[in-house]
Image (tube, rainbow, N blue to C red; front, side):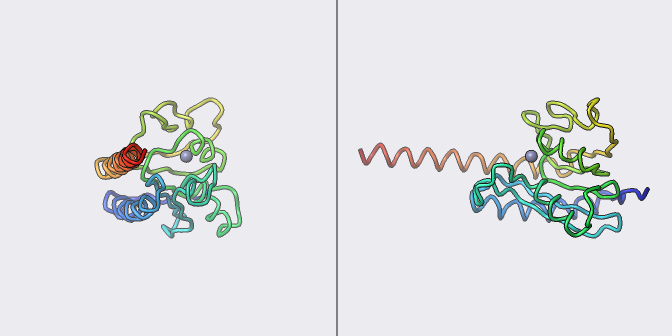
Amino acid sequence: MERPISLDKPQREFWMSRLIRRAELAGSIGEVPVSALILDNNGRCIGYGSNTRQSKKEPLGHAELIAIRQASRIKGDWRFNNCTLLVTLEPCTMCAGALTQVRMGQVIFGAHDPKRGGLGGTIDLSKHQSSHHKMIIKGGIMENKTKDQLQSWFKQQRQRSAEKKGVQIQAS
Ligand SMILES: [Zn+2]
């Protein structure tokens, strides 16, 4: 069985920086700024995704699932044992479940998510007894940058909705 590619720190940060820029674009159109991509065992990017829940009204439109769908079309396979998924935020429980289902070889994420994370934040589905697949997991890559990006986006959203409410109160 081929192994997923091993990435050193500069390589991990190279891809994470690209994802942060992509996430910024998603954030600018009202999506939670999260982006994911998938590398094959040669380090070639075969799938990319950002959140599309708002823009496409897609209830399960998380970055990871979109990247998996795209990569599976390119691979012509549903198994990802020799692939690596990189994402700016720790996958939620839904995505962590999907990652074990598709047997993702390696997952590298940015910010930890103590509220919703499915790879250690709330539960570690990769180590759960329902998971018969061993994933290599590395979290906290460019943790400060990825965390700041999310926090400032949520802050901005709160300010916007507060401003809207202010306008409504003035109008009535
Ligand atoms: Zn998710």
